[in-house]
Image (cartoon, rainbow, N blue to C red; front, side, top):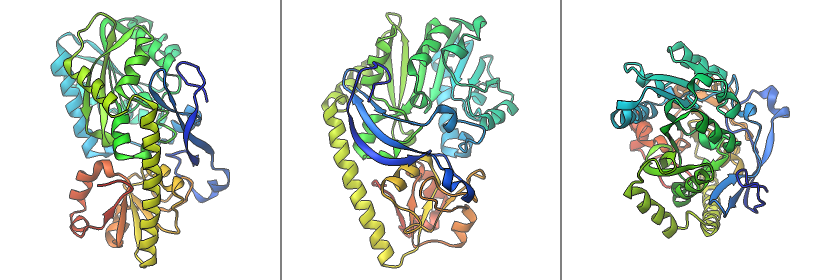
Length: 398
């Protein structure tokens, strides 16, 4: 296994087995040609970076049929409203140009419409990029990398903020992305991005965060070390509740900005909890194996008692859980979801049918596996009757 940043050899420490494309919901006629890869993870000690060994090609994951739309989640819509307001309040005075990497359906960028800030989105998935364009947002339907940023010559060193949310971990060629940021960012410009946090994943043993799109799981230590290699430095970090625990990173050019006291406290916390070293990975591995054992035991017990089990929300994360634990229609009858692109199809790998939410309401199961556990507040409120009966379960504590 080769580190994608340092290009040095590293040893994988855990395998989740053969895995399909996490968002590759498919029809019956596609079963025989379904793509699988080895979901194996390793840790680069030099830069404290948790990463996948192998992954599908980017255009296999992000294409015209990408089934995730940010605007479908009320929680994420609210979060992006707060995120944009935070940027405007903190940096709006000198902010003329902003670019978002992985802009999806334009949910985040639409919050800048009433300002004088010029915004551009980079989104490789054609279908969600089209939704963004219809909102009147300038959207480049392509990947953000050095090659593509060089096409924006007029904006060279003229972008005050480049932002992203749950997108940088999707980029296999992170070096090219950083070079693109360097090309566009002004001297005092900032690269502000949010990513699922390795520390939260280690603590919860939420191994479902590991799938094809999440090529990297970042910590403050890894972000600090990676960007130091390219004349940037981490100047601030702010914990977020999204995705079951995320971190907002603020990166700027070296010797331009003052680092916050909060950053030093968070870095020391990573050392205390082994988030920045290999020992933390081995502890995490044991937690995952124990979580798998308990989950399989739980669903077997439910089945033995003739309980009807459904899955709630056909998430990309559910693909890892179901395939790692070999849970299919032998345990779960169906998975309900609101996304029209998924309904009528089957889950990747285990081929559990995806149905609409009305089916769930009309055919309430005895137990429901909450795959979208990171949206539990929104879901528990929505399904109040079911929640009151305490019928939810998950692979982690909810």
